[in-house]
Image (cartoon, rainbow, N blue to C red; front, side, top):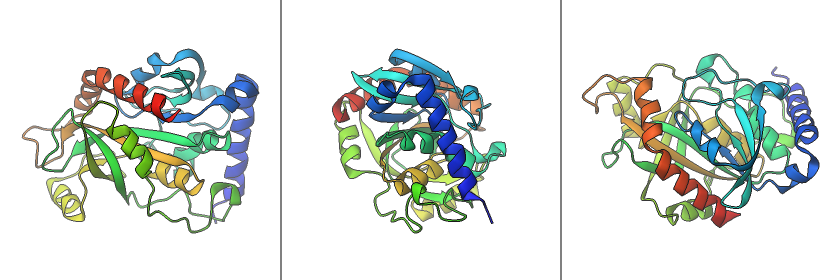
Length: 277
């Protein structure tokens, strides 16, 4: 059996280390947790009054090694609101377990952060989506074959059987849609990766109701929802999925899309933080 009590100790040890590193007043002030997806790490440069803690300095936190991802927790202010910004994340396809994938966000939740914006770069499946579009998540499909809730039950990580009717907060979704950028609503499908999907798989995903597909986010959302956090999700459509795009897919395309969307994302996320803070 998976030892979830050990995982709780890992999260508690990381939380204690961050309290010591940041100081209790800064930790207690944090209002919003931001997770930056592929190609979006440079948003961390926009945090004002920053204190940067490399993932490697936090006990037990895995370190991202994927191009386009940063590897630091940046605390400070965005839109005048105290935030905890993860400039990258780790993925199942790198060999990490679901527990390790969500360890950083569980730590922030244990520190008292109540509202989260999870961002990612995704392949567009929906007929109305084009590269460069921003999609606000209304729901997700967890097709990774795993869950961070598997194993013995630990009360600190939420109920044994958490409801997932509203993983993505309607209130935060409404806030996002009024922040000045045109957002399309949609369902995000999370797959294991690291290969991109085949055209047949994309047709399957479309039949299942997915509008975009990626390799992250769903486990973070599951874990945070179980712990009572309020969550919003945002996908940057970096490319059209296989069988829809006329060219071969590459990760360089994803990173470049993040660079091109930087200005719009800075404006959107800054206003989002200001409004919910």
